[in-house]
Length: 390
Image (cartoon, rainbow, N blue to C red; front, side):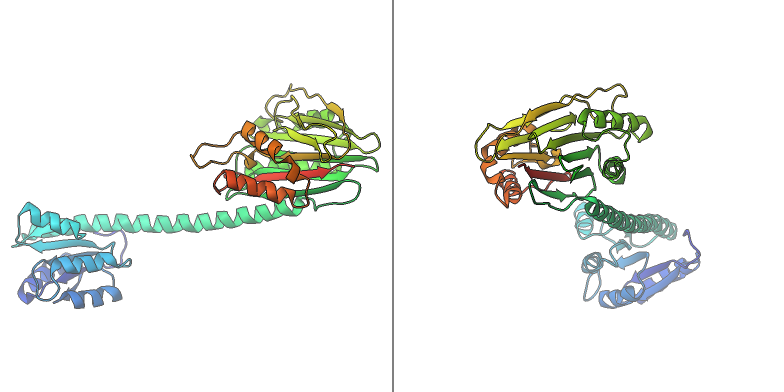
C-alpha cells in the first residue's frame, strides 16, 4: 500500500450512512484507516485536523454537493494534494468534464464494484505518494538554494572587503562594484606601487558562482601582496607570468580577462596591456586631447600557455581621465530584449564623457545605462573604475 509504516487515511464523504458503512468496511479490511463525514462541511473540519491521502466523495449530497466539496479541498494548500475521487451514477461525458474542471482527480461509478474501488484507491495512493515525494524534494531544493544564496552573498561580501576604497591626492580614483544574483569573477584594485608609479587593473573571471571568483581573487591577492616574481611596473610581464600560472586545465576550464595599467606621475606616462579585456577609455577633462580607447592585443589569461602580451605606452595630457570597466556593464538586455554590445557602450560613453569627470560621474553613467536599457536588471557582475590623473 504505502512506502511507510504509518497508516494511510482515506476520507469517506457521503450523506448516505449505509453506503458509507459498506465502503468503510471494505477499505478497513485491506488495512486502510478511514474517516467518515456525512457532509462537506464536516469533511473539511476533519481534513484540516488530519489531511487524508485519498477522498471518496459522493456527487449528490444535501448542502454542499460533491463538486463544491472538491472545489473547497483544492482551494486549500494543505489539502489540495489529496487525491479526490468523485462517486457518481452519472455517465455523461459532460458531467465528467464538469467534475474534472472542478479539480476531481478520478471518478468511481455507483453502484461501486469492490475490486474497482480498491484499484482506484491504490492508483490514487500512488499518485498522492508521488506528489508528496515531489513536495519533499521541492522543499529540499528550496532549502539548498537558500543555503547557496547565503553562501554567495557571503562570498560577495568577502569580494567587497577586498576591493579598494576611493583615494584622493594627485591621483583621484573611485569605483563601483555590484555583484549580480550569481557571484561572478570581477575583482579590481588601484594603489601606489612606489612614489612615482600608480597601478590600476580590473580582472573578470569567466562564468558565475564561486568558481568564477577564485581566479580573480587569487590574482588580486598576488598583486596586492607583490608576491609575483616580476616587475609590477611592466604590464606585459605581469600578464605573461599570470598566464603561465592560470591555465584552464588546472582551473576547471576557467579563464579571465584583465586590463592592467601603470601610470608614472613624473613623466605623465601610462603603460598598459590587455588580456582579452574590453578597452579602457582615456580622455581629457579639459579637452586637451581627444578620447582614446586603450584596447591591447593579448588573449585572455588561461586560454593558451604560449600567449604573448605587449605593453603600449602613451603620454597623458592635461586633465587626463581613465575609465576601466567589466563587460557586465554593457551586456544588459535593452527594451527589445537584445543584449547590449561593446560598440554601443563605447558610443554611449563618448557621448557622455563630459559628465564622467564630475564628482558623481560614475553614478550618472550608471543612470544613463539604466535609462538606455529601460531599467533592465544587470545579468552579470559589473565593475567600474575612474581615475583622474594629475
